[in-house]
Amino acid sequence: MSAPEPRVFLIAGESSGDELGARLMRGLAEATGGRAAFSGIGGPAMAAAGLESLFPMADIAVMGIGPVLARLPTLIDRIRRAADAAIAAAPDVVVLIDSPDFTHRVAARLRAARPEVPIVVYVSPTVWAWRAGRARKLARFTDRLLAILPFEPEVHRILGGPPTVYVGHPVLERLAILRGARSLAPERPPMLLVLPGSRRSEIARLMAVFGATLGLLKARGLAFDAVLPAVPHLRGEIERLSAAWPVAPRLVGPDGKAAAFRDAGLALAASGTVTLELAAAAIPTVAAYRLDWLGRRVVRFIDIPPTLRPIVPVRSALLPNLILGRRAVPEFIDRDCTPDALADALAPLFADGPERRDQLAAFAELEARMALPDGRRPGEAAAAAVLDVIARRALRRP
Image (cartoon, rainbow, N blue to C red; front, top):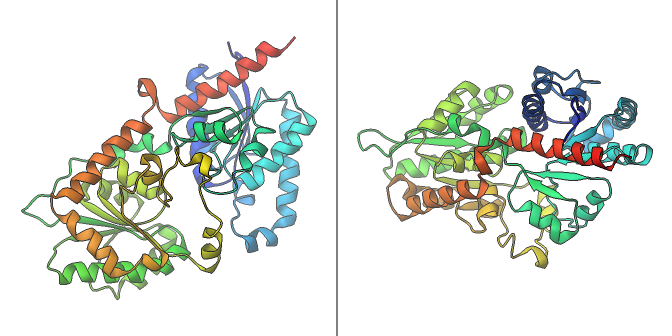
């Protein structure tokens, strides 16, 4: 059983969490016949799903040491306001979506004041990569953890983390948008999707090396249509940096990105969530990344604990490789990220050879590993898990 009109307090602190929260809210609305009541903090996606945010999500969407220190008084105030609002709302459940630096501090205040209110954390910290002790700390205030990677429930079981359930990655809800009837048609050059990142720092570090890579491919006699999706706030900078490329890419906006995914034959991408989107779209890919000075120092501390190596056997920056447990997608990080190396890895993907077929087979395996039972969507699975937490709380009441 679950509360007939569940009161759900949610907090999301960035755009990806806002999208997750909106899907969860729609799932809860569907499961309760529209009776679920929402309060908390979110962005435009959650507002469209029916949330009136306590304050703008932008107040807490801060990344990096410098920006955090600059806005520390505001962040401290927002932590207090969020915790006080959650306590006053007396909800049936509180759902904290990613943004652990903010949401976990709210959770500590809430647990101290209202220990009977169950707390659900949506998205696991990367305890399998570094600072494994965070799993036990998370268990102190988390009644249920909703994981978006299929190996994370077993990771938290081994590390002493909270009870964890896999609810699917949000990319699963976009399969129909991402996929197309692509093939390497001999009568026209394949589309090479170029994805140098969505942050200014990524663009600055990767645009030159990506442009030089396209030049090497052209020099080898390979024909292709280079398409580069550009986020609006960086389009001018991307246009400026790509003007010197030996191969001029065709820039498209957000609307053209989905169409490009459906038509692309292969991709050169910055490491990140986009590599999972490319795998879901069955686009053979080469991934790359260049670190800044701070990133190089942080990487030194990243290692997979021995107890987790049967679950996460490969050290990789790519989600497809981590889920599969092997380097199915070639990746070139930092000093290995050179135009020659990228061109050498991309060239075989222009033909229907073993390198291309191996990636496509790996992507089919990846889809099977990530699939949810009964064809459920991640938003539906997350809603079911939240309602189960509410039901268990109701059963514990005297």
